[in-house]
Length: 313
Image 1: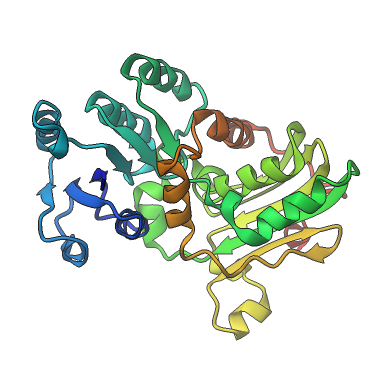
Image 2: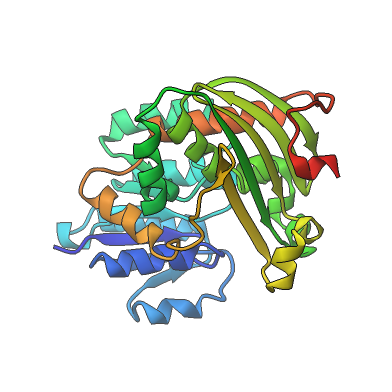
């Protein structure tokens, strides 16, 4: 039987991936909220979505449904709001008697997990998050191959995703609202590194500003040089020549890991796994949030031979 979904932040950049996932898993969107009313995309999915621009009215509607017939109740609340509102909106979903599927990062600060875990226990409902790189076929294959050895690997992570001036003006450009570059654009990759190579033994941060960060992480089975940027001037010439605005690269022991394809349906894959009880919860999300918080609050280290090549320029 189809599940009823409600979406918080339906007017945002990432929401369409969740809307497609809800539809493609055979479920139905019945309510949505966003402070902006430019949400005509809802008609691509249903003409029967109750839409609100105020979270209080949305909350009241979910409460009315919770007290009504079982077939009308919300089973899942999807959270696509700005990062700093995620934990608040997860609590709203749990209190509405629903499970929650929250876009990354689940929280900005690791201590925010504690109250969410307590509320999970009180409500008997779960919070799930989107760690979609763990479901990428090429990366699953890589992990399987890495588990065959215990050697220390040399890894280089580069992620440059061009953003215009709007980025710094929006909530994404405010560290207290987005968590900064490491959390907002890097958390998926840091989760991936932990999933592939084990726990953190030490970190260094060589550079940090509103547009880029770079550092070094020593993991249980890898030494990682990393570079993250939203500045288009950091793109390599090969990417610019090809008309690309994003550069995504991971090398392991000098070998490039090809995973540029296969991203379009990963949210749907996460929904499929979540709906059958194999989703990613707080326990899965906590290590990468602890790591990004440590990176965000670390003192800047002098550059040494562990620095990422792009930072040497």
